[in-house]
Image (cartoon, rainbow, N blue to C red):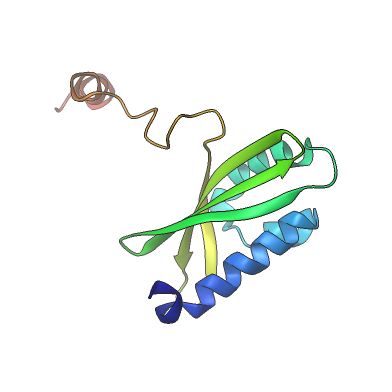
Length: 130
């Protein structure tokens, strides 16, 4: 259903997968907003460490408000990396990546979310208002 409603997003994700699989870093960076480029480059550096050949597989897509999260798995032999790419539609209609998260070494993408008591303590330490 979402694919029918957002064909440009699915086309952008497919094109992004293609440039990653071809290891075309310059073209891949064109999918990232300048504000998220540092995290994107970190992910690209991790992918670059994998030996040839690599395969790139889309594992899922979820909508969170105006953003979409695509989950990709990049494999080379027995090695595998997993990333979450947060996509946003720009005013000109183009879909770009605003954030990247490496979830390769997490049991789940929620693994680093603290329990409520720890989260409250962290917020209080950061701003003193909670």
